[in-house]
Image (cartoon, rainbow, N blue to C red; front, side):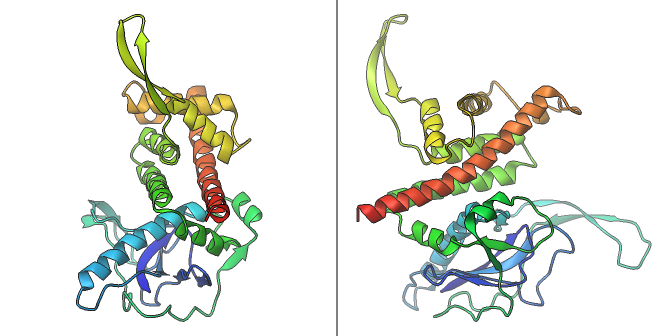
Length: 321
């Protein structure tokens, strides 16, 4: 068993353990720094790995870091609260330091490095740690995913979380690689939100595209340029729409799906930016409002489609061992 820290957009006062997956969520140790209000709440994530012989610790630690990243990004899709991990590239930035509590001093600005550290204990053990006295609430899955947002309540989990983790574990190597790419782009969409709404939106579409299969490519003669050109059927836009119709049926109208892909294409090909990135958004501007709604809608159906793809892919594996 391996362990590492992660963070959640909600408090983690208790533990949860998957009896089949071997994954466990634990609250941070008492001496760990904590967030006063809303923010990145640290917790400990334990998960199974295949260890190398004792004299090959670097290989075991590499597997621990790699699996921790996979499990964290997977939980970011399976849980309604944002689940995050520290990246290898630590950014530095200007930070506002409040005055000491009980004093009337002024705020102070400091150039700081983004990093979190807390006592973790042994990073690799033979068994899971004992669970906490308090348990995280398990909510029936349909009700769980209807309640999105941060209402101040602690972290909870869907009733089928252990089953979903096992579905991921049992994916074929090719499908697991595809799903890992999809969860990567979901994570990037969250990270880019404060920098560029356009990039965040394009990353959501990339998460969908990571799970689509390429079409059939053939050569056609272009009558205008009188040259052979490659043609793919179905094209990228149609694959995107078809995927959402399969894995998020009814969650978005066909016209809206086309608008999502058209906006994504304009962003990635350099011909468009969302209004907010151009500082053109002001008040209740109709075009800005429509783009924001499109982004929220794309975020919601992308998470839904990823979960449904995982469920159906695991079901196909069970039927075709």
